[in-house]
Amino acid sequence: MSTIADVASRAGVSKATASRALSGRGYVAETTRARVASAASELAYVAHSSATSLATGRTHTVGLVMPPVNRWFFAELLAGVQESLLALDYDLALYGVPEGSATRERLFESVLPGRRFDGIIAVGIQPSAHELERLQRTERPLVILGPYGEGTSAVSIDDVAAARIATEHLIELGHTNIAFIGGPTGEAPESFGDERRLCGYQDALAAAGISAKARVVAAAPTMPGGYAAAAGLLGDRRHRPTAIIGVCDEAAIGAIIAARRLGIAVPTELSVVGIDDHEHAEMFALTTIGQSPREQGHEAVRLLTKQMEQPDPILEHLAAESALVVRNTTTAPR
Image (cartoon, rainbow, N blue to C red; front, side, top):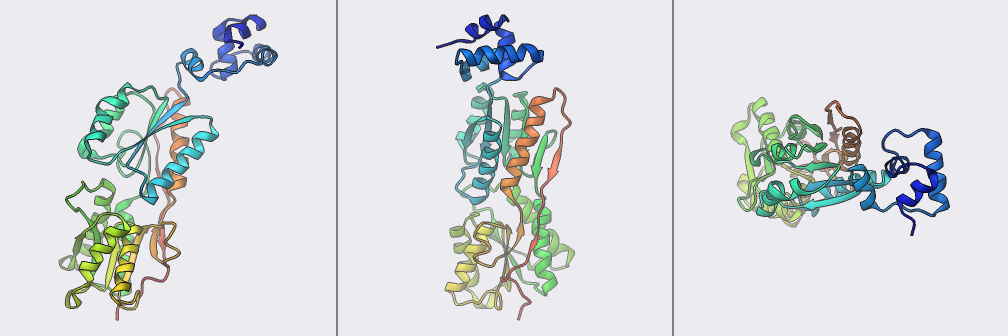
């Protein structure tokens, strides 16, 4: 099997020059690059990734830190990141770990600092755990996906605005008895993004002068979580809300299923709004706040590539598009 030394000898250049010519990193005259490429072709040389890493100081690998991908939103983010990295011939090292877990703590404290990545993308950073600061200390190119990304490039939607718009939509229809499903359950720490969405709901009620009617129901951000919370909330006919906002579409869809099993018509007796525009939102005719997590994944890779290729890149914070998508689960209260 031919080696880089064989290619360099055939082309009459040093091994370092041959490596730069074949990797495309670093300046090499075009005539020299062509000579090296010709020598590599004649020798049927194929670069070994480990050897290339040693020669260039780069691994061509990006680390991706995120919560477990058992939620649609994170699965779509992962798909977007992976699509873009594959197009650039980058490998992906995935660390899907629960927020607030001991495993996640060890990941930030000792695992990530010891790994060799060309860059890191982190999803759902928790400010309370000082995760961003620890990632920045690794001194690698870094992009954040989520609502918290101070001092680094980031891609996110405005979670406060998303929930506020959803709540205002219901208020404009005439609802004043609006419940929010997705508060902290005590079983796992609430994500920072979900906290921001709760704030948006509360801000909208305050602006409308109906804060006293706020009702926050603890629920995991899943269909079963939304179902269980809504079943308990809607079971009492005398104190039943006229509208529900789910912290995410999964929780909202769970609420719709609970309402239907209780014989409560959606939307004539109960309006429901979600956030995210889940792949099943159209099937349930769910009114929601739309966003594209897959596209956010693409944007994160684009920003990371700029950081990896430029010595002093300008930090960018991209606000991903989100807008109210009105379908058939909301109407004026009876």
